[in-house]
Length: 251
Image 1 (cartoon, rainbow, N blue to C red):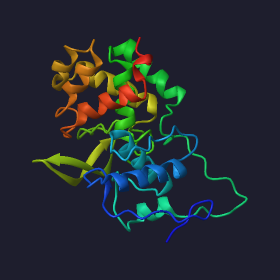
Image 2: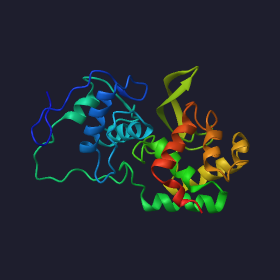
Image 3: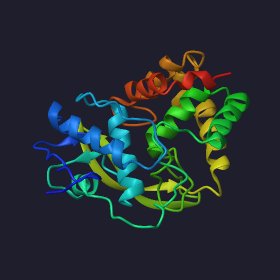
Image 4: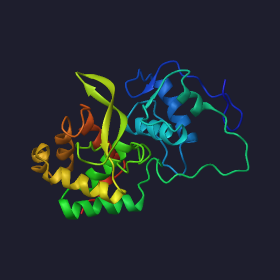
């Protein structure tokens, strides 16, 4: 049985928590509480409500990516799983500072990412709130990208483009499956933001979305089933925009 900083026993969970999980309220409460103790600091608090929401799933993914080097993270915590024990483990007493990480700080968007999203809005007309929400959702606060890709948006590569291969999870016929896909490799994050804006503003699959570009919420809905196979993609983007106040960054 694991203990926390003050020596108390970390409560067990009895059902799975997170993405595609049972999400019993008591178990969700436990994981939300543990996330607030174990997420990379600084971070905003995960509301400890016992109710599963997109923010908790993204926090689980950020923890898995940064603290467990899991790529791609599952966003799922099962009883007795490595993720549960990593969350519940007692921190080692050491004089060394915990490892520093640029990304994965839940609730905190780095200034350069905000500026890149604003530049995309000025150049391509894509609301900064949409770009930031996709950055958060696709990369779990920047913590989970295909290795050596500088690709936080999950942009797939064409045959003649620089690419890396990585596992990804897709929803096919209503089921979540893991496949190997080729993702575009960018020289830097600025290049990724530029292509993301160009792709949404000029790509034929996004013509319907561009017709409602003045309404970020409608734009998010129009990306569902087009940008991502997740049937809840638009709902998740809207939740993220609302709860992390991303509309303030729109021009």
